[in-house]
Image (cartoon, rainbow, N blue to C red; front, side, top):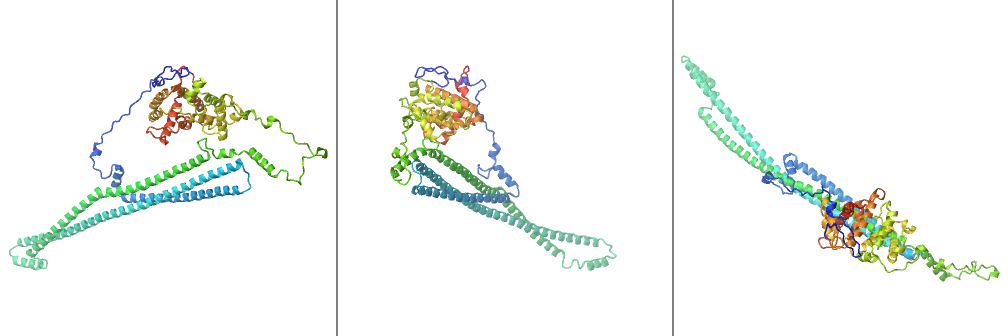
Length: 616
């Protein structure tokens, strides 16, 4: 049947089953919208020369370059990050010591308890088997703890080495930054000294010029006086100014001026060169060297921060893994492997006592000659022998434990189409029988389907259903009192189908449909995949999803949401050994897609399975 067909299809046993088309389940507003991929032009960013790698945050680098405390800021941040890294390493090392001590102590305790029990005069039979099995379980958990401690030690050493490596890079970069800063400071000092020499020479030239200008004015003043007293005035001026001009005739003053001007020219050239050199060094430092230094420091910060976060995330993952490992050891998800609870419940005290009693009587019967005797001649006052129990009490089990004859109509491990054609039904009888009992006794049971039943009782119910399904009464106290045994049997039946309910051939199609991030598109694609299922699978899935829909309606009482049920039934309905999209067996990636597919189908149960005129 093509996806989306809404007509009738003929089942192999002569029944037709209508399917809701994809078009009918999409309302008039369910249009798919394409994502706009328009990108804003960034010509300015492309033209801008960058000194760092594209992966580096330019905005942070620019902000650090603009501030006057970028280097000390990053050094202090590296110091904080190193302290945090070392604290994390110390914690992991101490936690590793605690886990190692706990694991070795548990391992020693389990082995010692097993050995001591083997040499003691304790009970035998099913009890000793359960005891030894439980000790082996504790040994396995202890070994996991020891491995967990080893992993924590490795992580602690890696964090310690990371802190050492970052500290080494920090010191190298700091030395480089100090050298560049010292070079710039020395150049600035040279420039300041050159400026000082130039200023001193300029002041000296200015004084000389002022002095020279002053002498020229004096000469002009003397020449403008009266000629009557000219000799006397000139004589007085010469006598008065002789001390000022002593050794400073015009020729000497000119030589001094030429010398000062020469020194001033040299000082000016030296100052100009120092300014140019300092400007070059400053530009190189602030435009090239400083960004590189800041980037190196920021990379140290990122390296230690991301490394610390990575190892802490690994620690969290390992903590979850060790808890899940202990849980799977204590209560294995595979119901064929007994957990600790099932091991303890396997103790049969009644059979053990009977075995012990028979062995004891065989070994010690008739040897107690000093104690009172029951049997003997009645005329001497001895009691008559105890009459044997009634035949039905000795040999006939109660109706609820009576063996069931095999009618040759198995249901576990049988092809879905085969058993439905054989029984001439639209839905397998075991599915109807179990779902009706669950809806009658378990809709308000907290954790329904999530909490597994008792292994021994699940196996017992499976055997009885496989021998004669019609004769099993799920209303009996034995099964209705703990409905988790019935839910476990139903999940076991689904897992043992030769071909999963979602079929191996369509597994990749379902996974591809579940990959859609758009909720509406995923709903539509999964609806198409459901409609493409074979008729037996479609009808069984429709009935099962209707049942789970009723379970979800009682979420307030049973705490089982759509997401919780999807986690439980994802691997059950898809099968745990199906090839994924890449052709390999399912892994964690496919497991999440399986859960998402079941969740989407269950959320849209009415749209996918229920016709408009059909009552949900």
